[in-house]
Length: 253
Image (cartoon, rainbow, N blue to C red; front, top):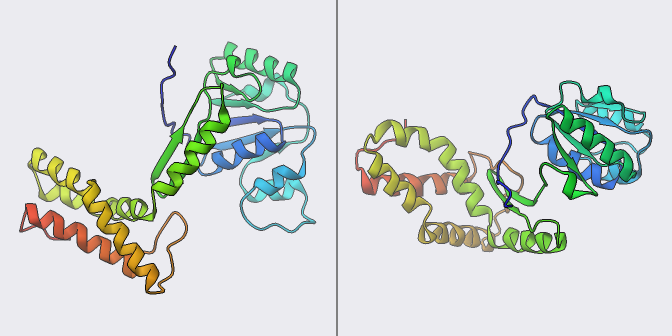
């Protein structure tokens, strides 16, 4: 049986994490960026959980206070069956295999997708190793046989796919609607998009970034690069120039 790869839109969906240890923390941090409504249920938590959370927190802040700033819910108790109410997805990440199995059985009975961190055979889905550069999301899965290999491949991908991909995708988010609006010929649009994604065009963007770094310009950081930055504007100009090579009267509105 082969798994079906899928990216889920969890915005405003209710998600339950049972457990608040190191593994649960990693799952939670990934969920934060999805804008899901997350509820954590655990009688205890350890320092690894706080370490994995984004942002700067006062060491004296309580766990409840920290979680409250992240717009999610923390129930400081053991899992209850009622915690499954209205949940779309569940992650069973307690330190008790029997409890995780019980959560899986009860979730499946309600047709709720469940991931059991210590028993993949009970899971409806697994969470692949992933790395992101802006809107470029790369995921790697090796099943349950050697998770360390997934991590190694992920790290290799992160090295090979640089900021040029992030810049191009961000620029295209701005220009794609204009390209579609002004170029009715679908086959021509397809050819343009193919050229923009070509190794040659991306190599040019990579060289642009290298020259900028050598010139002492600050390397872009984060998922969003300022649309006012010189690098962004240069990439945007290159995209427009390429589009005009196919359709001379193309203009940015």
